[in-house]
Length: 374
Ligand SMILES: *Cc1c(COP(=O)(O)O)cnc(C)c1O
Image (cartoon, rainbow, N blue to C red):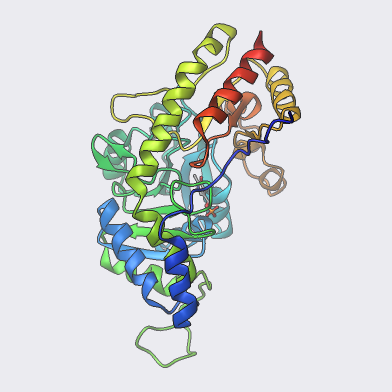
């Protein structure tokens, strides 16, 4: 019997997705005009607890808009983790500003808050907080620093739909936050993203930037500023609305998956592997993905190869920003070192973690990992 492949992600699309999409086709509303956009923005922003939601084409686009809406540009510095997806760094660099990196906490894999204050200079404009893999950043000290130094806080909550920090929703804690609805996120629109804020003026600016900076009340086709076409379509919003109806169920599935992996893979700690923390006091892991950090790079590569032969999907961890060829070639981060981020990037990977993952598939994965290790 040939075993079935187990992909790293499978979304769940068996709620009202087809019904709402059919409605789009039948009514002809398929562009960014259409009733699902407003409904999705309203429902998602109120779920997270923010006054305004601005739906966009993806999470990276949302970051571009957030940076520009806050008037961050040439001469400004923006603090962010070294260990992250490239999106926040790319937005800052393309805006003409400079990313300033902070190393990771070896336990939570999030930005090490104790190293943050030393990175603040008179040029610092904002902090991009990236909540990584399932645990939120410890926000209270970040918000206190931001207040003291008069800095904006951008929350990259692209992996945190429904996760809380001390009982408050991630994505409701900073000046502005962004979410992604890529198919491996907790809810998906295929491609998609959203900005959330309580600041009406900022929300208006985001809306304008998403739509080529057309003047909302001015004459059509007269522009005073450059933006993007980063609009979400009614089709995407239809998917999003159907997904949002099930978000609490999805979070339960993720936590159940994480708990089962924790139990079945506990033996790995004796072999020098690191598992995600289940609980950090201010939050319980939501397990966006289930990550493992191998004792060294070689062991990781061997395990990933072994799993690939067994048709088990894995993904490497993020590659740190200061080691990105594109940024090095631009002259950023010269001689900078972030040892924890470097180690996570080299030794870390994640195993199948999608919402569609079945319990017997989890057991297959954990058995194979055990076979490899012993
Ligand atoms: C997925 C993700 C993004 C980017 O979202 P896209 O919709 O893929 O552009 C940004 N930040 C983080 C932390 C992410 O995980």
